[in-house]
Image (cartoon, rainbow, N blue to C red; front, side, top):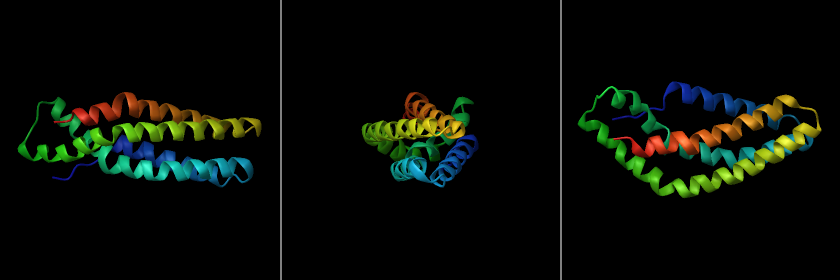
Length: 140
């Protein structure tokens, strides 16, 4: 069975990727801080797309009481997420540190849209830590 990330989460990640891409093109200190952030986030986002977000595609069906034996095929993903969770949380610490640097550089440059992006991505990381990762681990 193929497990797919819920579309709202896909769209949110795509929007965050695009905003980060735009920040990398800002040039100067902002662009360099954004490029550092991009180097940290890319492998993390890939891992999320592979193991953390697809199990969430089952939540709506499970909440409706729907279950079938094929859904158990998600267990290797949830087990891998549970095993890699400490590393993913450590990655978040590095990402948040890079986001704080980007926010500070952007604030000094008067780039409020980049400040807002950095703050939104910090909040997104907290949502993953407190809601999405735990929910994915609990699927099936």
